[in-house]
Structures are given as structure tokens and as C-alpha cells.
Amino acid sequence: MHGSPPTDGAPGVDIRRAADRAATRTDWLDSRHSFSFGGHYDPANTHHGVLLVHNDDIVAPGRGFDTHPHRDMEIVTWVLRGSLTHQDSTGNHGVIYPGLAQRMSAGRGILHSEKNAAAGDGEEVRFVQMWVAPDTRGLEPGYEQAEIDEHRLTGGLVPVASGLPHHRDTGAVRLANRFAALHAARLRPGTAVELPQALYLHLFVAVGEVTLTGAGPLRAGDAARLTSSGGQRVRATAPAEILLWEMHADLDGLGG
Image (cartoon, rainbow, N blue to C red; front, side, top):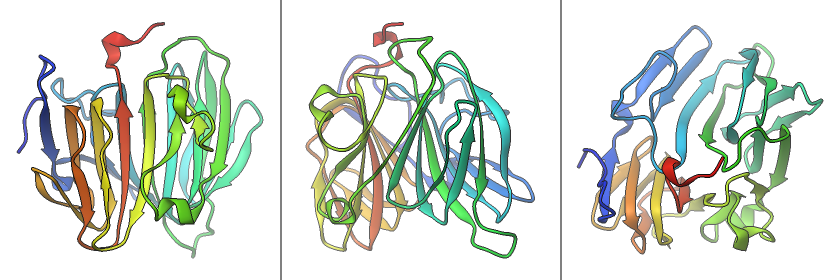
């Protein structure tokens, strides 16, 4: 089940398999791109809703991304294993690890670097980095991180980064987009969560295996892009970790 999402507001689901993602590989990086990124450009695969970048990265010990610029983007990082050192031009410096949500608002311009915090003989770091368009351009650059309680993550979908008004007191890091939220869940075999109703949903299986109502099995690296949908159940068939973007607008629906 793979094709272009509906453009008339009709419900739809578009399954994207892990092996179909574009890849960038170097001596220190293994990066899988769910959307067009860098030299991998496909005019039919540039975004879903307001989600423009969804990279699944593995970085070797002691290596990483040197200082580089960003502008007018909300960048969310979620580490799956290992630890990642962040440093930026606004003076923020820290180490991101599993269960710690991080958001960097590039705003009118920011420089940052990201490196595997482990030494040369340490562990690889694997993280998912996701970019959503802000609903206002030219904002002051910013940074926020928040510890997400393990008990909550194993109890269902938890907002970890959100601009939705009703998520203000949930402990999620704040997004400069009032139409979007990222949820995470760690599911034991046999447990299930129900997807929220939204104009756009992007479900990514980061770890393990699940089944999605009406679509069948999804394995690590697979994604489902849902349009004008919600209410489906995601059930783990093996220990799993999922990331879900809930979006109530597309790029045309944003201000600026």
C-alpha cells in the first residue's frame, strides 16, 4: 500500500517501508531519510502535513555533525540508544539520551553541532531527528529539553513535543506550531494505543513490530502516513517503540 496521499480531504493511508527510504552512508554515518533530504530529492516525497524531515540516524562513536546553520524550522530530536551531545550558537550545550525530548527552534538563524557523546571505543548513537515548519517565521532562536517519564511512555501515547493548546501542561517541549504534536510510546507485546483524529498523522515504528488497523504489520523503520484519519489501533506484536506526529494543518495552512 504505497502511493500519493489523497488531496481532496478523503481518508487514506500510505505505507512506506524501511527499505524504500533514501540513505546517506559515510564512514561515520548511516542515515535513512523518510522524505527528500540533501542530495536525495523526489518532488513527490517532500513532506506530510507540516513534517518536512524525518531522519533515522546512526552515528559512530566520537563522530558527528560539525557546526552548521538552520533557519525557520522546529527541529525535534529523540534518541533511541546511546547519547548525543548538542551545542549551539545561543549558548546551549547538553547531552541527549533516551527519554529526553529536545527541541531547537532555528528561528531567524542558528548554528549548532551534534556529536556522539561516546568516545572512540564506545557505543553508536541512534536518534530520529524531525523537522516541522513553524507557524511564524523569523522567531527568536530557542532550545528546550524535557525528561519524559518511563512509566508514562509505557502507558500509552505521550506528547513529547507539542504546540497544540491542550498540551501546554503535559510536560512536552513546546513547538512554535499550534497545529502539530509529536507523541511517543513504548509498547509491550499485546498492548495497543488508539490514534487521535487529525488531518494528518505520521506513524513511525522506531523499534520492534506492530500491527495497524486496516494496514497490517509494520516493522522497525516502516511508517504510515494517514490523511483525514484517526481511531485506528496500533498493537505491538513484539516490544516496540513508536513515534506519532499529529498534525491539524498542512504547509498551506500555516501563517508566517
